[in-house]
Structure formats: structure tokens, C-alpha cells
Image 1 (cartoon, rainbow over the protein chains, first blue to last red):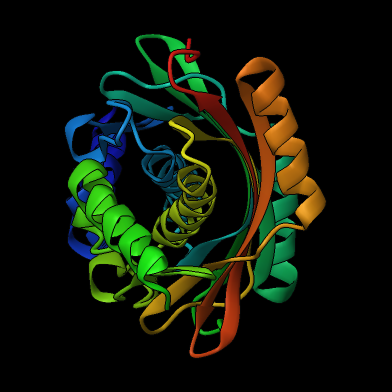
Image 2 (cartoon, chains in turn cyan, blue):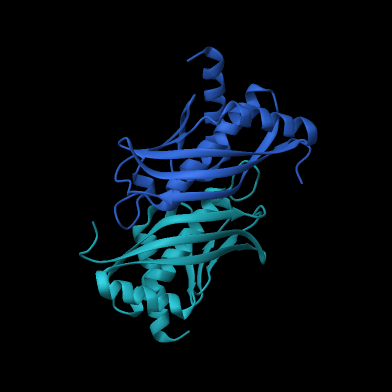
Length: 155
Length: 155
């Protein structure tokens, strides 16, 4: 990993742990930023079936999408707020061990469109797909739409 | 509340706290069962914007749907596993205070259909809508589809 990427990873990881309480409670941590990976141990997320609670799988996936967009803004020196607006989640199989949420890199055209929206109005929207994997199997997929707002433009 | 309902509430509340680790971590608790209400304090769910993290809103809503179906099974003396299969969530406004997830009672026809499916094959599926409210405003809605499996039939 390049030194610049390592700095972004360390910065985002520290921010996430310091500023997002449930990430601490569920022990979610940013493992990589290219691709963006949020790692989660099973134990704090255990449900009554001995598998990971759906809300924890969702939390890891939502954070991965947030981190992907925040990474993109950071790389462009954009001070922006990123918030999940809507989502579609499919729970495909139980997660019986530690799991990882991996954000898929959007096509270049989507990044370009987001850049144009932010330049024009200070606000934009981006779709992010995240796979949650447990022992290589995909146990959950999230299709999320995030709002991105440049600082000072938030409601 | 009737004594029977109170017993179900106390039982489900204790089960949820004892068996679902993230419910403890986020301090989610079952407040009522008719309608089903899951209450959540803001503090353990705080994100970097000083509002509730999307994953925590989702977790409260997912638990409310789970509790609604578990309450229905308990009332029919059915020993069943209830698991979220897919969901559609809309995050409508930031939650800047404690919040509550309230499951909407499904129409009688849906309960009857679930009963028939379980009687026939030991498995069924049910759609549940949950509103998450903060100071009366709806901040998030969840449309969830849950799988219900009678004990001994689970994969």
C-alpha cells in the first residue's frame, strides 16, 4: 500500500473508532481502503441462533459504503458529510464466524457524475454495493444509496 | 395490559437481552408487545454527525419485526426460528434523540397465510413493516421479509 493510502487508512480507521459509537460496541474496524473492507468479529454480534445478527451485518456493510465515499471525498480534499439514504439488503446465509464487509468499486462514470453534482450544487448522491463475506461465502448484500453534502451545505 | 401479555413481554424482553449480544451493546430493549415497540437510547448509537447511526436504526427495526413474529408464534405455542431474509429501508430524517421502532400489525390475512404455510411445510414467510420514530417524527421505515421455520425443520 502506498504511504498516502496508508495515511488515509489510518486516519479513517481512527475517525471511525473515535466518532461512531456502535462501531466500537460491535468492534467493527476498517481493515483496508482499496478495496474498502470493514472487519467484524462474530462474538459481539451473536444472536439467539449462534450466528451474526442481521443488524450487525447491515452495520458493517453500511460503514463500508460510508468509508468508500469518505475515502473518495478525502482524496479530492472535499470536506463532506456522507449519510445513507436508502438501502436494499438480502440476507443469503447465516454468518457463523467473523465476517467482512467489502465495498465494490463503483464504475468511473458514477464517480464523475458525483463530482459534477457536488461542483454544481454542493450535494450529490451515489449508489454503492457491498458484499458481506464469511469464510469466502457471501452471506449478505447491500445496495445502498448515500447522500453526499459538502460542509456548510448540510440542512 | 393483560397478565398473559405481560408474561409474554417479560419473557421476550429477557430472551432478547440474554441471547442477542448487539441488543445489549446498543441498549435496545423491548418496551411493549401490542404494538411491538423496541426502545433505543441515542448515546450508544451516536455517529460522527451527532445523530443515530443507520445501522442502529436498522437494528432496532429488525428486532421489532423479529419480536412481532416471535410473539405471534409464542401465542400459538409454536417453537420457531425467525430470521430476516430481505429488507428495504428508507432513512428519512436524522434521529437526534432516543428513538423507538414500532412494528405495524400485519393484516389478518397475512397471519392466516403464515399459519397455513407452517402447518403444511413447517416453513413460512411474512412481510413486516416497521416505523422508527424520534420525537413522533418517522425517521426510518423498514419493509422486511422474514423466514419462519418450526424447530427441527431448520437447515
